[in-house]
Image 1: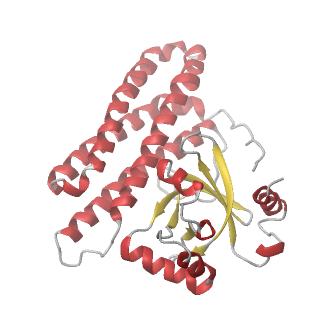
Image 2 (image 1 turned 60 degrees about the vertical axis):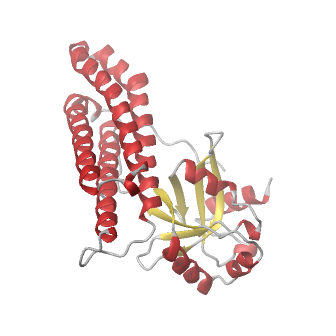
Length: 303
């Protein structure tokens, strides 16, 4: 058993508490998706918090000259799973940039001075990653009522997708306002990478969601409810159009630094409206059927 595997087993067996060198320390488990393999990988990491309570992890790699594998993974796949104590939740991993990264790293060093030693051992800048908790549900916030049916899960996913679109727009508006020197504009350095990470998480989740529906959910509905064949055919066709729309959004966001603000925001609003209309129609067709189907129990956690 590797050392990391032992730590993960201890963490899960004792409600987030681990002995040995980690005793009394702030430790979480971060599960990323392999950049090349596409398989989940879990690592134990020390953490700190921002002033607002968001979790921070540092890509120290014990002072080595290469970033750790988990950091490369989250750049390719920003959607991650986090376990803290007995709580687990989904998040979008956003590396901090520029002055904000330096400020957050100084905050980390004040509580864990060893990270300053790791930085001194290498010429690379140790990345600081903010784990921005995913907000589920039609109105945001996962709240006290976890999903119990397939219909609940559909609303969770759609709520998250709507939230990501809204966040990308809000971040873009803040970026353009700051770039233009608008009075009262917030100082938000490093929004470029934040917008990229949230857009990439949105695109990957949307793609997986639609592939799952086309391959598994819709055939079952059509088998038991043949009168919905025309509506499901429309949804499949919309999925093909949404795939093109998703690629267009990714291209738009990739070039937002040099984009005309008015054109960018107009296009983003138009695309967001089309995606929202698709989700609204899908909910009207399939939600009454899926709300009566209980979710299967989750599989046991593994390292």
